[in-house]
Length: 177
Image (cartoon, rainbow, N blue to C red; front, side, top):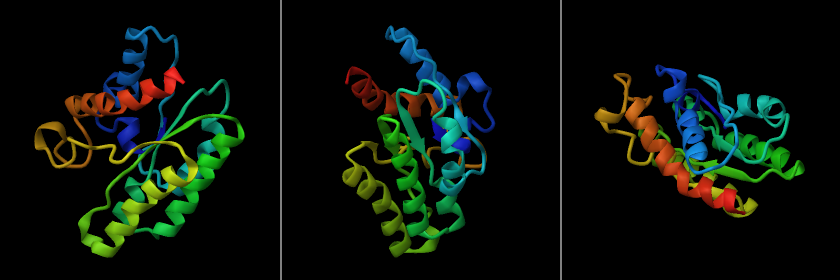
């Protein structure tokens, strides 16, 4: 799972981050797979682009890409984020690794146009590359104070569990392929 602090589980014990919870779910469902949490706090899509080679080392069967939150928080150029994510997808596909792209929402303070273009990056990439797609990683978690730490950005353990449950149907679909 290539991501940022949301994936890394900032502020949570490692076993409560959503990648660890997906690993538990895999084992419960009878899959003998290891989930590698390649989340790094503060990472942008550009940082993920630089790390994707490392993330794809070994016997990688699925790559979940959950990057872009920090691009949006920093108001980085949408085109640059799209290019970075495309390169990550390309690198995985060169190795025959299926990709699940998890979308994100930009904060509204950069205006409607930025927010619209930002959101479209994820759906455009998913459609163009025919990869599995979850439109919003934080669906049902963002904005809910019960599921977020006091910073309002990072999920609590309950929020991380919600994210794992949200991703599971798409992950399971990919496993069955």
